[in-house]
Length: 169
Image 1 (cartoon, rainbow, N blue to C red):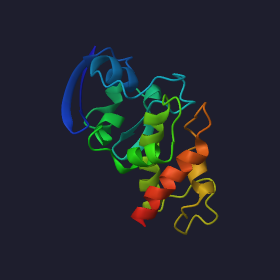
Image 2: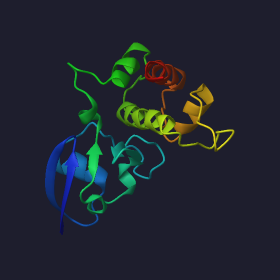
Image 3: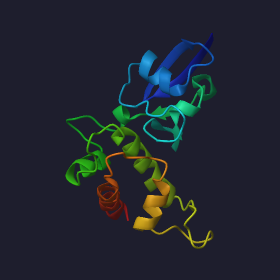
Image 4: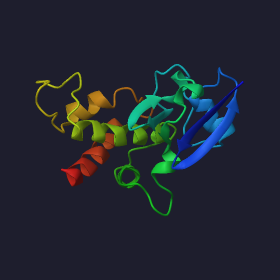
């Protein structure tokens, strides 16, 4: 067992956990934040994506004790039914979800993707690593490729992210 303290959705949280507990299980089982989903539990689907210190990660692949002092944002920390995050509202508007299982991870990843592009961080499809990445469908699809949607709502997801990206430009 080990003690770990981190900030989750703006609140300081202290837990005593088995050192083998993943961040995903700490969020879902110990903090009861069930918006973050356990999909494959192997880091292949992206359903468990959360934002840690501004970077998106697969929470199933990291141990909770590795995040001492970190700031973690889950889907619950982005918005609520009465005050949706702009990306949540865009996903609804553009039907960027179908069954909804992957949606929390998709939205957390999309929030971080926009921050990455705005920070000028290149991706695998960036033509010139010295130039700012362009907000194209190809760029968004590459950056979101770690988030799988079994229903195939990809074009709607790109439309939702593109709408919000246009507001940020």
